[in-house]
Image (cartoon, rainbow, N blue to C red; front, side, top):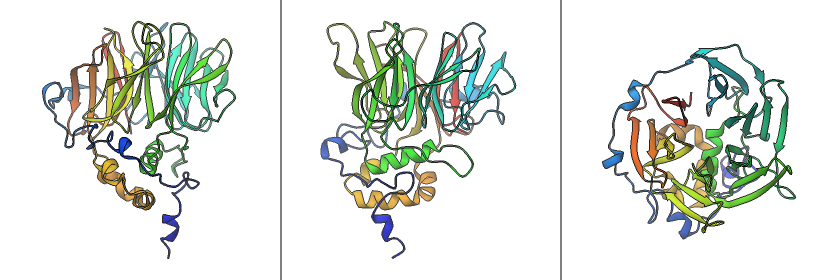
Length: 361
């Protein structure tokens, strides 16, 4: 009897949701499905395991916790980070400065320096701008213009004309962890178990202040990056282990194609590389969980209540960053196959010949 409510709804903050039926066409895209990543993954060719990330230098260990991304201030070369509690940090010449500011409740995820402004996707507040000189904080977008509110802003990039393309991962929200931060990993797992595909790619126009929906129906929309020529924007679907390209210009304008799919791990952040390609972070190895449980919504709903027991068993450790060319073909991979030195890489940014990566701590 004590477990009866577990079959009626999901736990907080998904307590108003039920696990959804997942139709066969969507199950086919999951790892282990007919059109999804191969299980177990074939780590061969470009994906041959290596230990390249064992030579990575760990910075600010024990000082900055859970910064989902990293940005570089062009005028100074300073590194800008936002930790999982909402504090803004700056580092110059690999030396961390005193904390700059607190951005308020929420979980900062993807962010970029654009001119003198830090643009931030915050899972609680939406798309934000923070003036680096004055400290002014503004909410740019927390709903689609004339439409629904956004509950899980995740990542962004800025086009050549200043349009901010950003993702809302899901219609679900992020709950507060007992240690004082908003727990995005738990919300991701709840989203996966719910069988949700309510992720969106959005565009914010700074000239009009309007936000429009570009793509919807994404299975946990995540990282965003503009192509080098500005003619397309790419967006990560974490649950389906693929990256989509949406064309903004040219003969394919307004259409979507697969940039890369059937990845050997779950993708998170993506950024443009100096040579016009992309750096794609695979935050965790593949798990059979989503495809195995997909046909059984009541089982998924029950399992959502024991995530604290499940997550350590199904979310394995590794460090993995893939290099893609401009057409999405994999051309290289950096790994820590055991995750003992570098694990759960969520974002990577190339600057002055260095690859700056963020790991979850």
